Amino acid sequence: MISLQQAKAAASRQGIDMRVFELRFEPGFHYGYISQIGTGSLVRGESGRILLTLQESGLVSEGDAVETIAHELNHVRSILKTGFISSEATAETSAKQAGRYFRA
Image 1: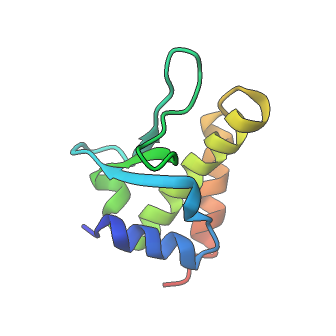
Image 2: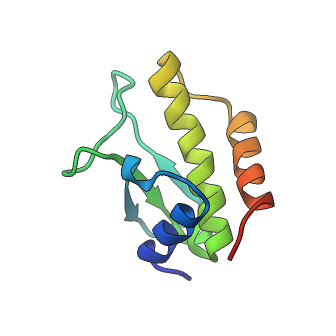
């Protein structure tokens, strides 16, 4: 399992603007998630950045982390643009594109 710092560095190398996110870790076997409150607003950390929680599967490798972050970024962009979360299929397309061009 890689660290959050390694995940952040890998995503940055791939051109993902990590100033958007505050990464957190929570034990669990999913890849990761962003949280919304009852109003649909994104949950933000102390830094004011959007919280992105990564779990074990999202930290197996730098490639998995980049794909997970790209997936969640797709959701965030949709929420900020339309007020609604993008579909899992759309977000997964972003993840696969990020993985396709991943550079270690």
